[in-house]
Length: 520
Image (cartoon, rainbow, N blue to C red; front, top):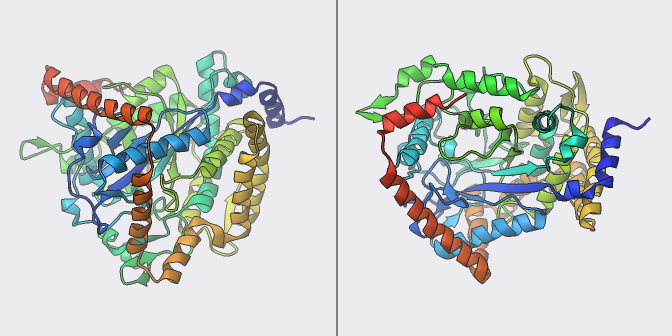
């Protein structure tokens, strides 16, 4: 008897237009640094436009933390070209400050001196700024300087007619994407093993008490966990222990949005103690467990494109899931844009597999502690010889499970290759099998080996890599059309911010109240 997944693959193969309709996009973060690798303390460069309104070049938490964003794109090759073009434009317009090409930060100043992103004086801009000030009060600034690659993925609406059940197109789409998310969470540890590239940090990152004692001192300025794959995604990195009690439900979208709503409307005693104002100025948007929906840290999110002043939770509930955002990818320090086309092709096959394979519901309350524990274990010690994970309550060797997982992904790489008329997805999959058989081929192992062999500090090695990429990007030419489009986006963004600042008709406090009232 043909399995459900096999039947779905057969239907996809019979309708190649469904696979051709896949879209992928990237949001890639990176710190601006000076010539010595110190965090750039300069404002967001005017030559890059307004961080508030430029759709492709903005900032994340810090004024120094760039975020470069692609459009949704039809092929992995075109995606990486687009992302590299954006990096090239930044290198041409702001040549003196390279982008730090590593997830763990460059040398940081004292925490109080890390600049919070500024978006101008409009109510919209002030809301983004105050939210980030609130993050600093809640979690500190150092953690917010960690950077990563977010990979967005969507299937065309008609694909869910094949892949999911439901009485309406939106119901089928929501059911299908939530199933994808559950399978992703079951297997996201594999991405940590294959692509984790942050096993070490500089001493300046260890400003938080207790961090240094948990790490091994590799050299005077470099600390690591010897078997780690991704300190960024470990409990030492971009994690929030205050959210540990949140138990979101990934079985259905209605329960997911209801629990996000509760977290965004339930006051926290710890944040009440901070307060919302100091010296007459707002220092957080509210005292709730989450100021806004995006404060919830997770390795994957269901997403819907939000307009200005729209609440993500409200539009998710009303319009449904439009795409997923995989948030656990480390920056690849060997890739000028932080990710290679080979990695993008593998992610497409991996995510397609997650969408098509059967995805049982999680047990109550709707999340999977076993998956979270596997993820955390691989982030901290994924290359430890003989490491075992838990699968359905039973131990299994990481190497064995990884090999089986790649075998399951193989038919999806083949489907994508049949759509594109080449063998590139299969080649990307084969490259990952090499890492399973040879842990020393993983990015985390390669980085630690390079530090030892070249007798360099993590900071110095990363600075050398970043500057080499920056020199190559400065020498790379943009097409006349691409450069003109970037220039126009810069001018338009500055004009749009100016218009926003001139058109506000209510006070910021009233604006914040309206923003909170828009949450459903």
